[in-house]
Length: 413
Image: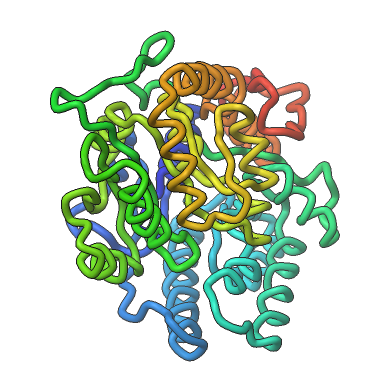
């Protein structure tokens, strides 16, 4: 995604800026008028155009090859300008490991921020996976993990995956996804907001991709009509992506325009407004291996506002939500509809779930709990250079092994 749309990358950039670092982001081009990351002090954007978006083996190869060439060219420019003292790479795709070898050869740290399990994403997109493509994706992931100086993982399952593939546990730092407190206009215990017309909103927030099962939310809305009619509730689908057209077509085919709303992509303030006005949030991701091991960014956005969440049962989903979630076994539309119907009829349970979710966010999941361990990775890797530039030395910057630990206090560069 363009940098201005990737909320994790935005938070990481702002965290590094707060620690005194200058940041440049090389990413696909979004808004052509942007030169600096919105909300940042001076994080420079070095975007590149993407002409082809992959949908098959050949087009993915073209897209990944083009991205590699564009990123390599811009990164070389940053190195010769004296700006690239350390590099962080995000995925997908896992094709940038040759650049890691080159940067490490000249003494520059290379940090891999592991966003997605690419082999599992490939399997989850449907159809019979090609065994040779799957082997290639596993090999690329192994190379990406093993060539990094250190790895940043979004949860404990991603850390376990890195360790199984040969990365030393001390070189993996867990930094979870989640909004910061200042992004959320909620004070104290969140109260449920009921619209003037009495319509309760069920919200999905996020990317519309084949693996995200947004179509499942539409089908669940169709099932919910059978249980409680068409009045008093509404499904809001907030986001965009390659499945947007198929979702819109399904809504029209089922005649659900009166109960399902598409908002398109939202900025930070709009996200906050939509979620604060919601009654229930839905995480429709099916319990595939990828989703079992992944923490969805939208899930933490939900609990940050104290929203009760209906989700398919999964390892990392339960670790994130605990009792703030209501779980269904397989993610079938009828299961989602049944659980949504139960929660819409049970305000006491919703109130309890709101409090539990908000408490988990404040005590463990907010970005304030992730920023310290994240910044400490770069302070540790660049400690000698920082001292050489006259920064106050840090006697010892501790390694943070879990994203739930309280942020470490470190000296400012």
